[in-house]
Image 1 (tube, rainbow, N blue to C red):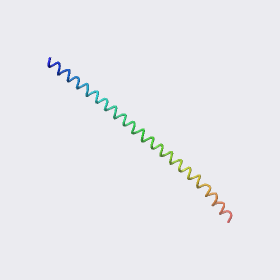
Image 2 (spheres, one colour):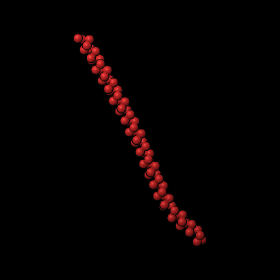
Image 3 (spheres, rainbow, N blue to C red):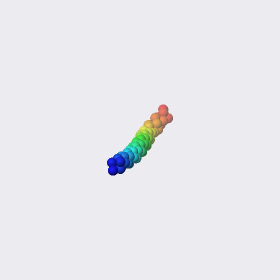
Image 4 (cartoon, rainbow, N blue to C red):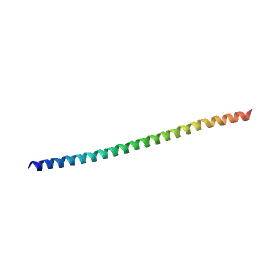
Length: 75
């Protein structure tokens, strides 16, 4: 009877360890995916903001160039 109890306890412990290992692996996969998603999203946001900032600056500079060009032509 004692051998059966030990066998059952060992089987339960092994099953528990396998289950915990699978959970840990899945958790690692999830954190990796979340980290990659966050990095990609932040990079995209940064690129988009950089693009908008550059376009705004070009729109700001263009009238100045036109004004200076006209000023030079008037000389």
